[in-house]
Structures are given as C-alpha cells and as structure tokens.
Length: 106
Image 1 (cartoon, helix red, strand yellow):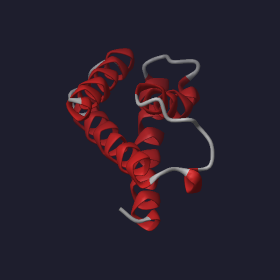
Image 2 (image 1 turned 60 degrees about the vertical axis):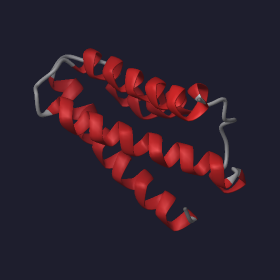
Image 3 (image 1 turned 90 degrees about the vertical axis):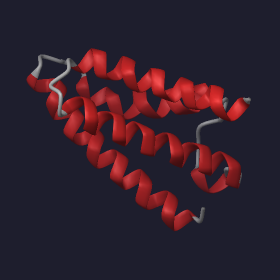
C-alpha cells in the first residue's frame, strides 16, 4: 500500500471519528474529543508500533495501521447506526482490533 492510499484511509477514519465525537457528545460525553487519540493509541499499542511520523514506519506497519483504521471506520459506522451507547461502541471497536491482532499474529 502506498503512502497516498494510507493518507486517504486515515482521512476517511478521522471523518468517521468526527461523527463519533459528535455522537458521543449527544450522549453526554465530556471528553469525546479524546477519541481521536484513543483510537490511535489503541492501534499502536495493540500492535507494538512506536508512535511518531508515519513516513518512518515500515510498509508492514503501515498496512496494519490502515487495515485497523478501516476496521475502526466500519465498526463505528455499523454501531452508530444501531444507536448503541458510545462507551459500548468503543469496547466493540477495541474487541475488533484485538481480533484482528490475533488473526495476523497466528
């Protein structure tokens, strides 16, 4: 996956997170803006990737991050449409990312 595709996927994910932030605010979240950081930390910590400049990451790390971002995007879209609570949505996203980690590590 080239860097241009990685940027496109990240932009799609951040647009969805923006929707999720508003969704969480409507449900009473006072720190919903932290979800941008929380989702990024989730991916980086799950796969033991050092945070920093994405230009310095390996192609494999970029592929893992991009796939994780697509999973996050899809899960947010699916669960918000079902009107699930924002805390439960984050738990579901976390579970999906961990399932992906197990899948690629085996």
